[in-house]
Length: 235
Image 1 (cartoon, rainbow, N blue to C red):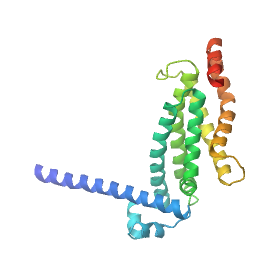
Image 2 (cartoon, helix red, strand yellow):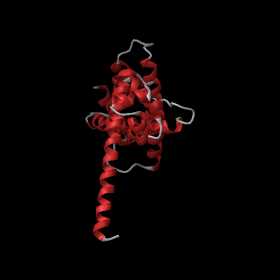
Image 3 (cartoon, rainbow, N blue to C red):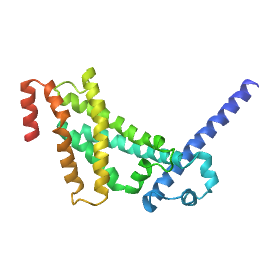
Image 4 (cartoon, rainbow, N blue to C red):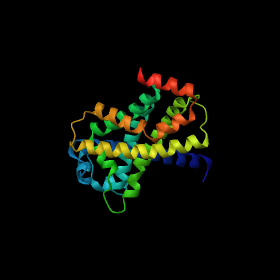
């Protein structure tokens, strides 16, 4: 094959890959809208109809419904990533940063319970590991801004590298906190309690902040830092 022919073939391959990626995103966006309005149990036929195509075409881009769930989850993760970062960046205190992260998560749940359940519940016996990708991704997103919260609470520079002990606290806390907030959020969605989103965010923040993590942070601070931190949180 000549150099010109190779370049032409590579160009066609790139354009096709770009087109496929764009079409895949478009189908995921359609699926997200359909699920939002019709429920987490929406069928692939309904999604295909809404997209103006056939189910067989949808399956060209997604191997199965779990593949579509993951694509929709990636859209949600992209949205919540920016929201989490903005929430923590704008918080005046570490505790306020924690509360802001919790409210971002609860807002996502409240905005579209159907989409939330679509991306967090498996559609088949073998799908749980794949859909778990969403929770793992959220855990990583929470861990990153919480590293800055931890550094601020410990009285160090927020861009300074964490010690091994701090990194372990961040990883353990993020996994536990996401599981806890997820459980609280799903309980809240059932309508069993009268709490508003803001009230639930306040209460959940208190539970998480005054637990083992808060004690760990206090252990790393000097007496003066603990006094200053307490003053900030009570004013």
